[in-house]
Length: 170
Length: 140
Image (cartoon, rainbow over the protein chains, first blue to last red):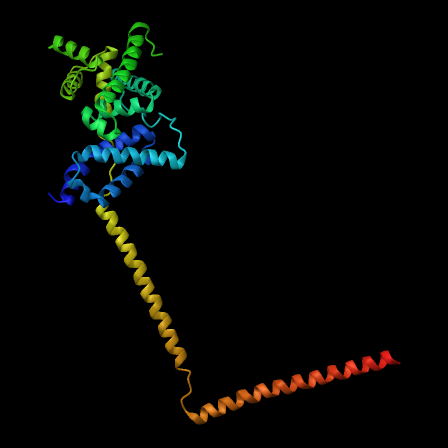
């Protein structure tokens, strides 16, 4: 397969994943979109490397992560707003309202997690990536990935238990 | 089925589930909406994965666009160079090739220069006279 074909079959289909990951770090849809566009251009110019890369998806996600943190560094960006992440929907049923509340709650809990735990949580729970791919993206060991993920889940579980017991999250 | 889901949930919180088992868990709550906080949690994970409403330009088109802009700049440069060369050629058209005409033009130019020089000479003579007069006044 040529680098151009590899780009079409392995990179273009994961651009949504790259965007969601960028959005989880930057919390601004326009910025995340610009960053992912830059990543795609960067990968396109380096597409010959796709022939040697073991997991093109993990490679693309690593480039996205680096590009996001470069952007943060350059723009002295403070990740504060969760408005973009939890925009209200137009669903009007009670169940949908409940689910939207749940999403807002989850967004708030995730915001309290350390960056690394939040990144790993996103890559595993949302993007459904393997421990090995996550370890490759973050350049850490698989056991570290498991530890960080377990800590994140424990925090979420304890928050869920509070909701169940007292009807409050914090 | 419910016991299987319960077992998966326990494994999930203990960090022992595989990606496949986690997908199974999410799929179950997607098709069996739950009112418990935990059930809604798994369902919200599904929602987080929903496709974003964004699209990206193919870098190929971006690079073509940049190539076109480079081509446009080069074309503009070539046009500018052509105009400069044409202008230089037009200036060369003013060269007089007939010797007689050239002589006349040169003579006129020299006359103009010499009349200017004479005028300057007269003016400097006047200044000299004034200086002389000033010296005489000072002596007396």
